[in-house]
Image (cartoon, rainbow, N blue to C red):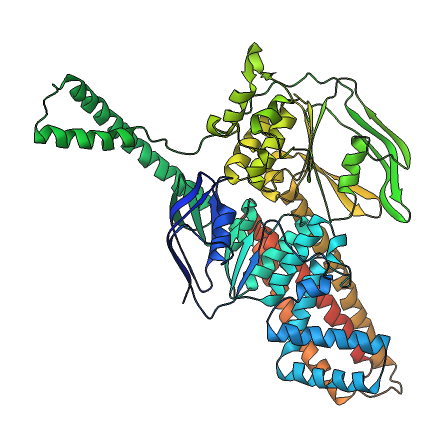
Length: 632
């Protein structure tokens, strides 16, 4: 079943061609990632497909009987609405039924009456008939995992990240036929992203998404559509397959370009030698010459961002935390934290939202004071701080003015200098755009420009707070290469696991309640270690539970005593538990065999997490069996 069919879509913004002659088709259950450079109209294309914007040309057909959920990059929720109203702004009849039920429950709690009680009873029966209880369980799981708890809070009081999570929750609870997701992982912590991956993989919805998170793209999609220089290219497979096939395509294009350039050189020589009088045959050759010229002057592949900016020398004393404590009332952020940064150290910061990651960075910058303890910064340290949400760019200024406000030129390695205009070109801002206003840039282009102004200051200690948000994958790849060679210290807060795995050597894990764990390794290594710890603890609990079962059986055998009898329902449950426990033991053995045989890192993590869940469930069912066995 075809949900979306788009052919020859084109769109201009002001005088800039965003995209031209784009073909896209989305079928039932299809999972597609859209990849393109910032400023090439990814978000505009999604808006067109969602029916919010209109293409200038082309044909767009949307199946009349499908529902579409669209998550915008910048959310636009009604400011006066409550969280509850924002999530339930849908025509889905089951969601409207659940909304009525929730409101009736609240009314009955606040103002109990026979009328409310009767209405509640009627709604419960209707929910039973329409299978809404399962829907409600899923809805509560979504809200819980995205940490949406205060349903009566108004949208106006929320942060940008909270608004994004509410907009995402609103789409997930609708369960539309097609989800169009623009940067869905922005403002989610890593735990939320991993949950979202699992949830979307179980969903029956078709998905069209734009994301910079390469692990997320690999986990969710089975097809990639790339827009490059106005053309679209399709790849059936994951992100790694896309990179491989794209490289092959560029290699073929280079070979064709070399042939075109040789032919162009030959034809150009012929053109110069021709007399003014032209025959019909010569005119035909002249016409074809201009086609050859166009092909010979094509560029193959993406332009790259070159970041060989010189940094200041860094001394031996860099950044030191001496038994630092930080709390806000009863909320502990950090307790007796001691650490001395070494030269060229690369540290990643992870933890759930609200555990203090941003507060930690603000303490380094002097924007927050420790409750006690001392933070010492070395004299040679020059910090460059790339903030998660930065509004310092003046949108009424031109791009070139923004850069010149920092410096007219910057010092490169080997004594070379680079002007502001030349530097902008290296950051993929062509000279034709230097006098554009900042206000016309896309979100990703603004982030790139902000990053440029930070690097122009020649820092030797870079603090990057969610640097991957809204940056395109091409810019990210080059940024990663630059940071690998960066001759200074790196401190990175990011939910992009690929980015972190590639760059950091160890982690500060903010575990909550003031605990900060120093883990030696990258994020994937940390997740494997945590999964192993959980598995070992669960195994230990399971063994204790097995011993308790044996002791209970022995005690029951030796000391028969008067006891209450099981109800019919409990007998059925008790009988079922034995087979359920047996099945879980089989699953446990199978997963342990898989882990023992090795495999890909992602597979090992999935098996390890699954085993942890099986062990937890095994312990729970064993405890229940013990409880019921007392009365069996």
